[in-house]
Amino acid sequence: MNNQEKADKALSEAKAKDEFESKQTPKSKKFGKSHRKVLDDDIKMEDHFDDKDFIKKRNITNNIHRKNYKEEEIQSVKSKYAYHCQICHVEGYESNSYSEHTENRRKMSEDAHIVKNSDGGPAIHGNLLSLCVYHHHYHGDKITPNMILESIKLDGSKWKNGIIHKLKFLDGDTIDIYFKQEHKDQIIKYLSEHENQKIVNFFPNKK
Ligand SMILES: [Zn+2]
Image 1: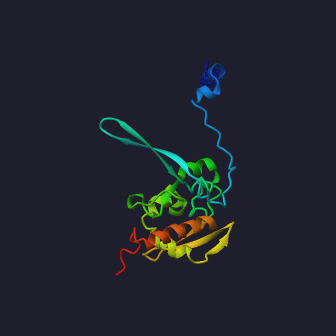
Image 2: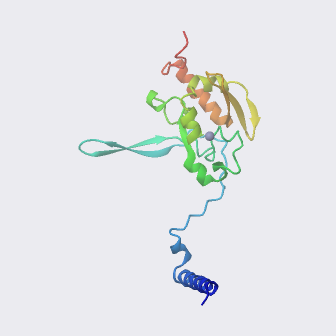
C-alpha cells in the first residue's frame, strides 16, 4: 500500500467512524442542552401608565435569627416600554442589536429611580425610567431629578406616539430621551410635589 492509498484508507475510516457516532448519538445530546428559541418581538409599548398598576415584590431581609420576607407593592415602567431603553430607543437600536428581540431587552432593561432609592425615592411610575443596563450605570448618576423635570416641562418633539426630550448634563453634553405622554405627566406630578416639599435637594450646587 502506497502513501496515497494509506491516506485514502485513513480518511474513509474516519468518515465511517464519524457517521457511526452521529447515528448513535442524537444531535441534541451531542451538542449539549439545545438553545431555547428566541421569543418573537410580540409585545407593544403601552400608552397608559395606570396609577393602580402595582406588582408585588418580595424582599428578604436577613436577621441573625431568621429570614424575614417583606412583601411590598411597587410599580415598573420597563414593561410599559416593552423593555425598550428610553435612550437607546431614540437612537434607533432596533435592528442588529440587543434591542431587536424582547427576550434580550428583558435581560438588559432596568427600572431606574429618578430620585434614588437611598434618598427615599419610591418605585412608582412617576419616579422611574426604563433604561438599559448601560445607560443606567454609565449615565444614571449624571441624570438628576431637576434635569429631568426642567427638560420634560418643555414641549419636546413628537415621535412614535410619544415625545423626545433633550437632557442637558452639567458638562455640556446632551442626550435624547423618549417618553410616553402619560408617563411624563406622572413624573412631573411626582417631582413637582417633592420639589415643593423639599424632601430632596434638587439643586445641591445652587447658592
Ligand atoms: Zn440604553
